[in-house]
Length: 363
Image 1: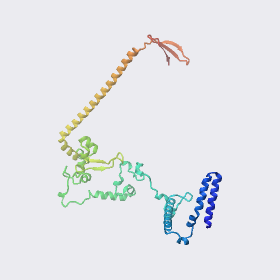
Image 2 (image 1 turned 120 degrees about the vertical axis):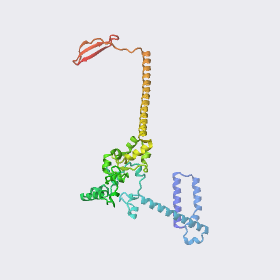
Image 3 (image 1 turned 90 degrees about the vertical axis):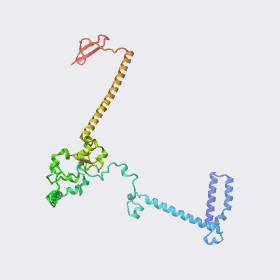
Image 4 (image 1 turned 60 degrees about the vertical axis):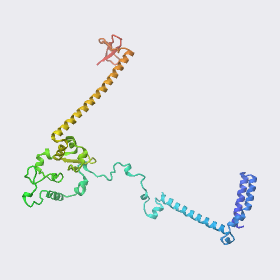
């Protein structure tokens, strides 16, 4: 028997003696354990033999050992990988570093992902917001942005204005004066309003546009709906009307302001309602509808008030039948009551019917 086998047998005997002294096992149980240990050494001795003696071991036992060794090696590899992955996720509090950072060279927080998106709980991201200066200036519409515009010099601004003015005032003349586009209103001026010409496709000069606001004034979307009774789908249809969009002057977060020219709105409204008379009839019909709705609302309010008054009258009559008529005091003429504790003169009155007395301070 080898030294290792003797050591194992000695440990088993000591453990068995310890259990006997503590009374944890009965004598018959101890006798069975001793008999089992006497039969076991041959088996253990066979397992502890060196590989050189493996020739005497059966082939099935050798294959079983090889399979068991392979499984143990696989489990050891898996456990080692799990240990390395867990250590890479942990952070060393003392040195503020971990193995993953030492191997990859990246900060540990770079791999952390937020549990929820910012859009789920941030209503306004101030990091991405831009100053629209109260909604009067749209930074996105400018060519280079407001910051670059602000950094421009006076000479650059003047040169830009000249180039923009040259598109309309200094445009190349036509081949013949008779071919120059003229205003359709006065048929004289050839200097057309660039806004009406480019946006609304109207051949109108600046003088006529200024002198005839009843035809060429710009209307907001609200004015078109209130004055000409047009609907949102009609005004939003780009095939029906030309429009000029600007930032909303009330707030930069509101919808953009849309401007329409009056003559085009009137033309479409007259076709829709049957001319100017039809538009007036539609206005009259809507005003009558408003008056009827106001009258109906007034009648409903009166009915509710009558119901409340009738209920109050019923409650008053019921209390009168239960407690009798409500007593109204009839006080006599004031009588001098002298001076009270605070030094004020007092007058007294008495009810003629029930005798209730009151004291009044004369100030």
